Image (cartoon, rainbow, N blue to C red; front, top):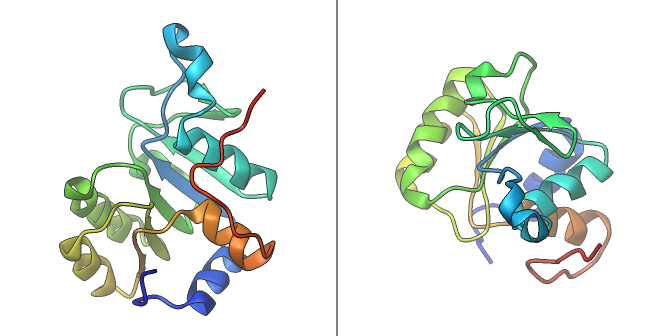
Length: 159
């Protein structure tokens, strides 16, 4: 458990946020359509949508495609509406790129998914008063803090 950020900050973040830019959501490819439902990014996106969040997928390799009913954009600067959380499903070494983009669009939170953390990204966003949450799954945190569930990761859906 990352003690750098307490539960109240995470709970307040999730309660006050409406729109999430999700970087690294996997696009559906015909040859692997049976596997796409099990991709953690797609599971997390779908889950957040079920709880009322607008989740905009960001993936430069799938621009214009639809994932869970939302059109994929190339980069977060392409999103016209206010983004509350920039949620990242990309390697830790890329986090500084997304930290700089988060600062540029003046988001409230940079959230790096489970297994992702980067001290330079943390410094970049915190210097601009943007909340930094790392190495935590946004879906797991929602379940734990709002639904009082203790989930396992990844929770795979079977359709």
